[in-house]
Length: 393
Length: 188
Image 1 (tube, rainbow over the protein chains, first blue to last red):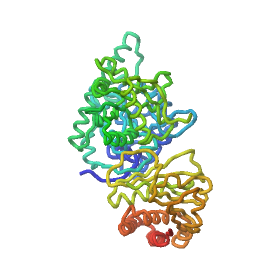
Image 2 (cartoon, chains in turn cyan, blue):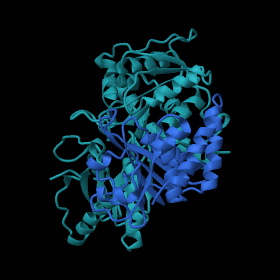
Image 3 (tube, each protein chain N blue to C red):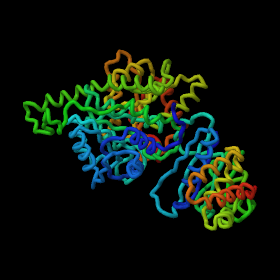
């Protein structure tokens, strides 16, 4: 039986952590993710979990502590945002290449500068090549559900990769909304125990962790890691199918919203997708065939599946909530366009960078994007491919 | 759907008040959103918080530009913030002040809609013996907006106070009196 509650995104993540009761939580605070370790510290103090709560002196150390714990064969988690995630950068790559399934909650926040505490995906997108699986959420319910699925995906023997559960800083992390929580016992049964095949402290099969990879071996390790990310696709869907069977909520690589006959569509992520859905509904009521794809899984990137759902559209706007400074479009655009390159018939495609540093995205702004797409369909002219939206001047 | 915008100053608890309203609406069976808009936080700086209260889950996650109701926790904000911006025609602006609605209206920069006032300071001082504007402001917005059934609201709040102040039962009566007085004394 689900439990009707109202929680912020951060409290939803902390609740999932309490229910899973990981072996180690390494903690270093940064806005807007700080509440997660605050809640977990309270659970530890109240005896609700027997997690080893390690206060470290930086995010670099937080991720390093998680690596050490995971290498020793236990579940280790942490949480961060923005510059904290950047400071983990070096160690994130180590987690990926050591194939240690650390689960990291990220309340996504802009990177400096100017210094800013609000939401965009500058931080998590900058780590897209780190070897972490990345799951994104529209609201508190989705971030909770993603967290419940995270360990099973990351720890699966075909995967064994670290995973980020991303939520939108403040917009999701600090917004209190209704949520359906699951019973503690049901969560524990769904997530299961972690029994890694090999680990550092297994006396029957001692293991070296993190040795030097000479050129004669390095590439094999990297290809094996790349294959693990490919394998993650099937595991993500299998775990989602079991989640739906167990708890009734359906997840995939993305949510295709009113895409069956869509002519104009948006590819968008996170809380903005919820806002844009209302624009889709309003435009549909006016007879405009609008739709959107809300991407849940950014790593691994579901290129083929995304291309298949976009191929019959006439015009598509990719909504990038990070500025990659490539001078020709944001990261989500580059990957979406790349995924569509071998389609026989492709939609015209534009990139819109929006919402940086918490700049608000409204239903009217979403309608404006669809109007632009309608105009592209009408005139047959794509116009400028790479633009920004919502800024002054 | 009812949309509410709160204006306060950092430290006065406008965000907490919006959370309390969300709690009350949640307990009455509604779907709720309560979220703050953060700038460089510092005590005394103007801050904004928001509520959406609806019968279906609301997927919009933008700020609120055309609220049904605006709650002003600190009347000195009237000088520096256009608190009445975008308020819907049948809505209202509710201000914490000892002044009357007629006295406040001219300060609202051309706003011609309904203005309500509540002396949250006097009520709080008399019922709680200290200045906590949240409780009377919460009651005032419930009384003006009817976003939650009033009797259900008082019953639910009593339950949550008894839970929250289990170790200090003497403050429960004061808080309830504060709520009831504010619901009766809101003007306009």
